[in-house]
Length: 112
Length: 107
Image (cartoon, rainbow over all chains, first blue to last red; front, side):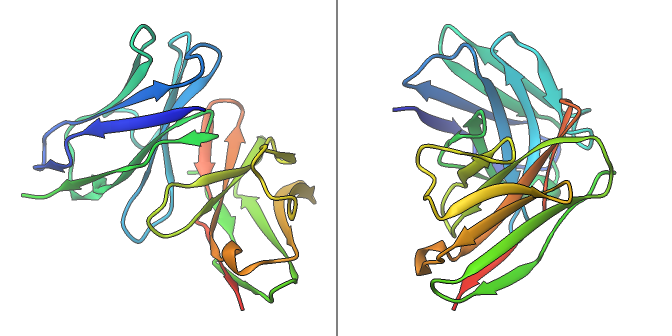
C-alpha cells in the first residue's frame, strides 16, 4: 500500500521561500517519477514539476525560475522549494507518485 | 503558452452516459491522463496513457481518443460520480498541462 505523507510550513509572508517535503511509505522509490501539483483557491490544478528516481527534473515553464524539486532516495522522500512567493502562490499543494498515488494536500497561504 | 480546454460543466442523468473531452491549443500531445476530484479531497487518478485504467478505476469509466483528443466516457452514471474532472496532457515528454476541469453534475 503506497502512501505519501507531505509536510511543511502552511503560512508564509511575501518574498519568503515555500518548502514542502513528501515522505513515501510502501513500495520502492526507484523506477518512478515524483511530482508536485497545486490547486489555487477557486481554480484548477496546475502541474509544478517532477523528478525521476535518477534525479532528472522537469518544471512548468511559468515557475521554472523559482522552483527546485529534489529527492533523497535514502530517506524515500522528495521536496519542493519555491522562492519569492506572492499571494498568487496561495494554493493546496499535492505530491504524487506517477500521478497515480497522491498525498493528502497541504494548504499554503501567502499573506503579509 | 499551451492551453488545454475542457467543457466547463456537464450534466448527466443517473444511469446515463456522458463524454468529457480535452483539447489542446498546440500539437505534439503524446498522452493524456484523467483525474476525479471531490471537494476537500485529493485528486484520484482514473485513466493514464489516454486509455488505461488503474486497478481502482470503476468499470463505468473509460478513456479513448476522439479525433485525436483524449476523452473520458462515463457509462451508467451514479450520484457518487458528481465531481470535478481534470485531464492532463503530456507534450513531448517535457511539459504537462492540466485542463481547466469539468464540473460534472449527476441529476
